[in-house]
Image (cartoon, rainbow, N blue to C red):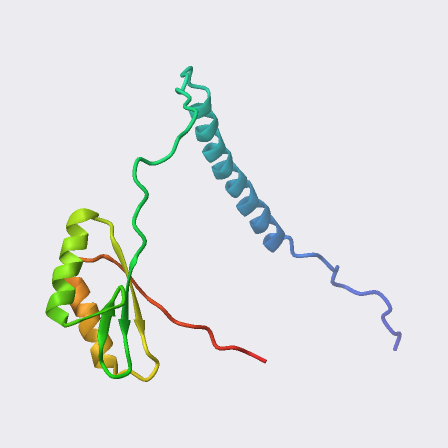
Length: 141
């Protein structure tokens, strides 16, 4: 019986994935071109924007107030010990002066979390929206 040396099946490369990628790239560049046309349209407007020599804000925003919660439960605002009701009053007064006033809460690592939660709740009652909690990253050796 003679041995067959030729192959019947021709080898072919599947081009479907490559065509899919090419179409996706074409769509991506078409959409990207639309966005860049919108940006250049704004620059083409014949408009002269006024120039100023010293463009600064009229008032500097105040620094955020720092509330410390010590391990023994003492609450201090700007170095002065306060109760929660006094803290709420001072925060409302500060909010009346500057609407976007911020607060940073610094709680001792050993403090009971409930005391920090009470300070956060007091800030929310005083309608403080810019609220941050200070933490320290773990030092790696």
